[in-house]
View (cartoon, rainbow, N blue to C red):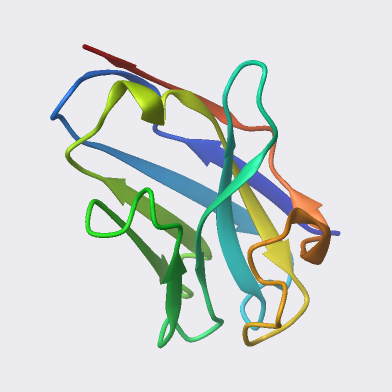
Length: 126
């Protein structure tokens, strides 16, 4: 049984930083992990993904250069370091796990991920 629990969300000012954490239970060491987000009234969208070893990462264009995804397999935790935050980053952020060790062609689609956390709210004020 895989369980993902996000933490670290909260309120930040534009230009500020937050770090999200996703603590996993179960055998996710060899899974690709990702972060998605969903703003009110919008579809859930891809933010970032990382392969099982952390060697490869992918980012949405909207966060490239501002967000960094990383993982610590010893702690079974995935992180999302968010910097230079903008009001449009306001959303519920979800951690997700795919059973693939490496990126598939649809790594940025939520259908590729079968395990999801409950989400953590990030609010960025202007």
